[in-house]
Length: 508
Image (cartoon, rainbow, N blue to C red; front, side, top):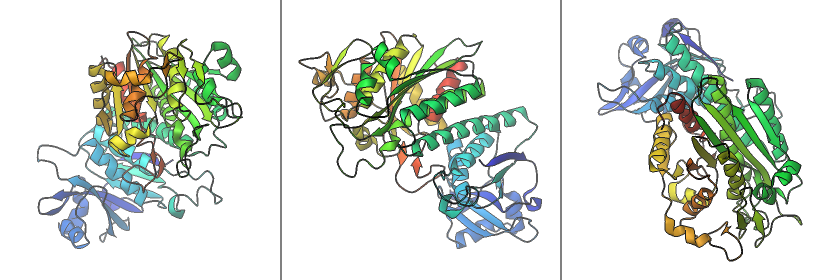
């Protein structure tokens, strides 16, 4: 992973492959952002004009490379767009810095060292830049034939080292901000690795083993229920979904506790390591990326480990509902009735609506511990992608204030999200003649129907929110900002922020 350092060095004398500066989109053309004063001075104050001549506008994510001026030890200047120039009294927001740093880090793949001279007004800015660098420099090359240090994204290794200029290496706040960014980015990138791992290698058992190893490393208590334990415990939803696969299901419980904690959060993640649709088989063209259907469990796993690494004063329990949804003679059929862990029965009308079944068992198990709040994360419905697109996740909740709090946390860390309702009239569509509820309802508003189904399995009086990350969990397009192609780690930063806010007593 890219090494990070805080540096007080001046840009001209720093030995590096490139100096990264920020450029904003001003009313009359590109504007060189603060942090790049020494670079601009070396161009006799004409850097903005030079960049404009080269076609730069300062638009978000735009990258322009030019030779460094005489006297610089770095041979290259990389100008990265920050978007619209802020008002005089306002600085650049964290997400603008994060995206710019990520875009520059991606553009510098193959470089050994780069100095980032982006605007730094305080420790939070340094943390945002650090996070952007580490997330933008991500690559997944575990299955490539060439050695990792010689072949990665576009045939080049990720940026080796980043020096953040304008920081204060001895300042506690700056050091803490970079340490936090490192922990978040490293665990988010581990979630990306899990999402990108082929399903023949990432079975429920293999995922559970990864979680167990990480738990041991970071002092997290772990409990793993295999198929025998699930059968004994009556986890009919997880067993039903996983029954068609030779790779047996698992329910993993990760428990991070802090001696001074006064609150308890439970995170529940959908972990379908491959989703064929089961007997309700997905059509051609819809199977190829279904290794990503465990992105919710990956996010929960990463969030719990991050909380442990940051030693947050809050108890956090993560539940990973892991199964592979495959068609076979032992697979659950449309028309089958499953008895869930809660005791409620579910008529399965569509075996491709399997995520809500595994989540239902895990939600009820989480509810038994009476946490202060439960948040589940899942690539749950294509309907949510139709509603919100590929970069925004939906938030539903049984408490409007909590839904707003989750939304604000997501916005704060730069994860696009949108509040969604739980219309009561849609519940009737899940009535079943033979069971307590069916796993399907009205087609229109399918994402909301799924949320209403999950609500049925949340314990009475427990605050709950549901994050449907079906859109942003897996990027099938080109990379942008700090977001790579493939697994994105969507939801991790929102969960971590919720844990931080709870620890600080600022969430409910």
